[in-house]
Length: 333
Image (cartoon, rainbow, N blue to C red; front, side, top):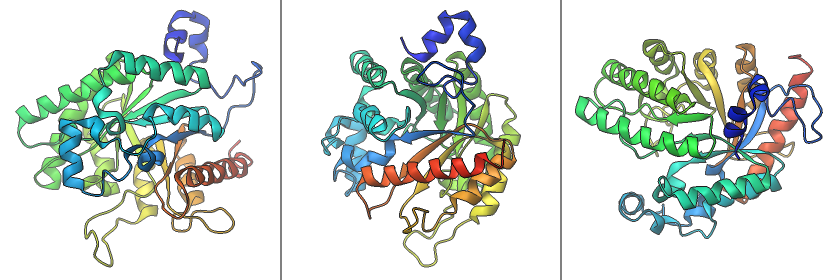
């Protein structure tokens, strides 16, 4: 039985839903709630799962949509992310659909995923969905199709006991047109997500989403209580790929823009100093901005660097978040 089913079947447990797992420790005794909770992003192990299949990206995308298991050349079973999480000392993971794109409706495969997660005592929190089309497409018929594709994966997320579901603000047209088109889709998706007891999140993840002000206005235009932001520490790219300097939205301003609407965090890391801090991203600044706005949710450790192995990089990212949490808990009691 997953956590979602347990809470449904035990009435008194429902009163604890908002505070689990922070209030009940492994001893079963009540403990002080953590300032924020730490999960492991499945994307941290994308190379172990994909191998070298993404090196030819057009070929990768063709295979992903036509023979999705053919891109899984790295040797790691995507479901073993729960084993990695347990080894790394965290009890929750965030999932990425393209890492197991061919199994969204595979009941036996998903049942085995749930079995492995239960065996490791690991909760699946958020399902992040890519390659399902643009929710902000200018043609309404396309948006309708894209919405239904997302809804199908919402059922998958619910099957795995997730509580959050992440989409991308992709579209076409002017910034204003994309905002209006995305907002229309997000209103529908937020309603549909409620049917599966999922919180809908949109990430600053390319297209106009790299602009923090645009993202903030998108949430305000969508105006739905079941909608929030998954804030990524690094996704403020505004164009100029491979050109120096790349165009980027200011990270501090971006976090300030996103913070009032943030309900989950992707703490992305690439490389570390000798003291264990991230070399280019000020984790302390980012978390303080969020905490000052009242954020107390899940922070996903997402390692995307190459200096260390994926396991070592994830370990350092988690260690950084744990150390930072310990320091900040003294200030944000």
